Image 1 (cartoon, rainbow, N blue to C red):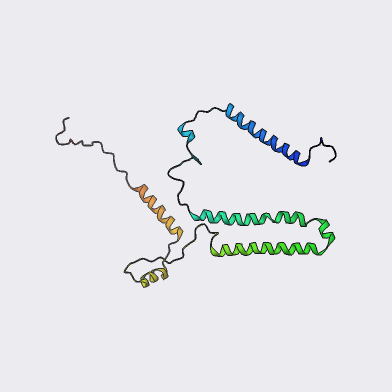
Image 2: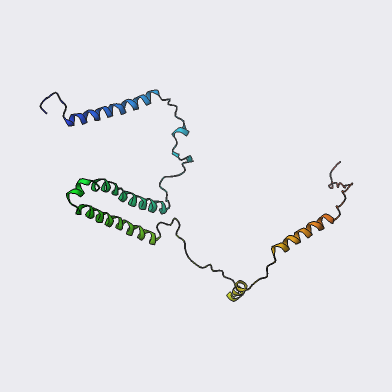
Amino acid sequence: MDDPGQLSEYGKILIIILVGIFLVAITIMAGRMLSVNKPTPQKLSTYECGEDAVGSSWVQFNPRFYVIALIFLLFDVELIFIFPWATVFGQAEYIAADGRWGWFTLIEMALFVGILIIGLIFVWVKGDLEWVKPIHQLPKVNVSIPSTAYDGLNQATYPLRAYTAQLDDKATAEKANEEMPVAPKIAFKPRFKKPGATS
């Protein structure tokens, strides 16, 4: 840089920072001057996704949210490393310089992804990917009926009626209802007075 009138690279960065600070300051001042300011207790209250904030924020929450978030963050951040690997090591200049370069990077990424898969299998086997871990237990009821009675009921075969027989029964019942005479309407309905009531 021979001409002292020219800006250095640091000078250009300084100008960009100053312009950014100026634009942010102008935007904040314009918002304060132009916006309507009528605070009410409802406007000043904490907004929690449409729910009224009740009590302290220091409350216990279910650790499932924390575990799922950590697992997602772990695998998401580690998988981000695949993108720069694919762009840098996929360049033809590196492969042309040495043919072993491509094999080395492929084996390296296979090891990386393999470690991720082992971690995923470990978390899966441990049961942390399930939202609610099931508790496998046989139901127990304290009754005096012996279990052999239940076994006899469960193993017995019961006769089933055919579906058409049920339809025939319904048709017969409908015919019987149609043939029944309709009760006559009551012409006189007696009215009773309560004891001690006038009129």
